[in-house]
Image (cartoon, rainbow, N blue to C red; front, side, top):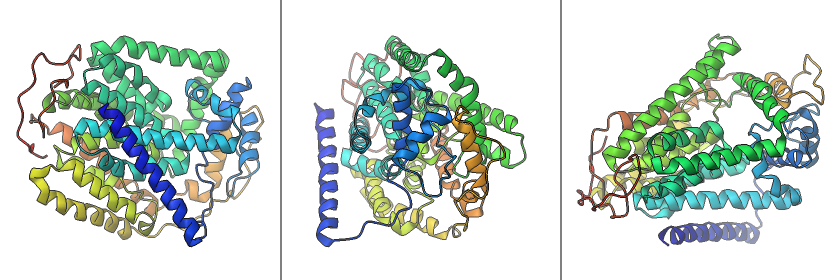
Length: 501
């Protein structure tokens, strides 16, 4: 019931804010904000990929994906030959097929509602883990985990909700339920896989449900798309899509760094894959250690996810937001995690004045989450200092480069209707200067996120052993064990404030 109350409270507040904002705009007769792109533009890719699956077509080819996308909305400066690929695996695409029975506008509204509810659920579960107000957690999640993904139309909030819910269930000793929920984070496979791996390695009670759900998702993908399409996805589409993104300015991957410094595409991808494997292994090890040292079983899932968003082969800012749950749970214990939150709630490619209110509110939420009553003074100072420093750093960045997003030429090869959609994507990235021409501002924007993720790993590597910030209820296990069962007796209450890293 506690989780339900938290969820309903956050959902109600979200609804009140949305209605109040809409009423204010209407009453003041304000013009809509100037935008060059449709809100949630990438949802059209999700919808069209699911529509292709429903029709028995291939969602990874140029057609029918392109025709559907352009019918719904053609992006600013998008050439007629271009198509935005559907990068999700078939089982993830199939989960959205029910939306295709609705007109696009209606489906889009349902999709946005699902994303908002996902953030509300993540706020409720994480608030339950740290035993702090879920509204404070919602303030932390709102700018990047919420708004950034909703504006982009990305399904990452669903991934965050699945991971946070599994972590909450693990904290409550419900390993089986955690095993059932966690595989749904595989909607974004490279983000959700580390959490599933940690469950299978360390939580015996979660293994069978996790494997059963994973197999069910795999069967859904094969039954909905067929063996040939799934083989094409892994053998042709994914390698070509990863290669196409090597030149993309929106990439935060190690593969892109290797490519820009002269590595051939194949070697750059192999370097990124090796880095990803290293980060996952490090995250799994640190997560297990922190779960035991801090009596927080949830960290066994959350830390590997955060580590996996650091570099790798393919990672964007929308997916890096999945590191926030680990930072939130670590914040009462670690200054490194508190600083990481201050950096992760800023959209570094957006002008400071367009997000000042959101970042300031996130600072309030972070202060409530990260500091107890015994640390009221430092918390109050951090409430004012963290947003000011983050926004000041954003203002100090050099101005963005004046590069056109329009395609400057035509592809050097014919893009057939039956070609992989990632081939058209490769040429759009290469021919649009603002997409593929590196700039000083564009590269500097990535450093705060990388630094934040490094701080989270530092928080784990320096952790020796610490008490919890508040007493743990008898129903909560104190460490990840082979069975993930609650302890036979309640642990002794701990001092109110843990040492900080």
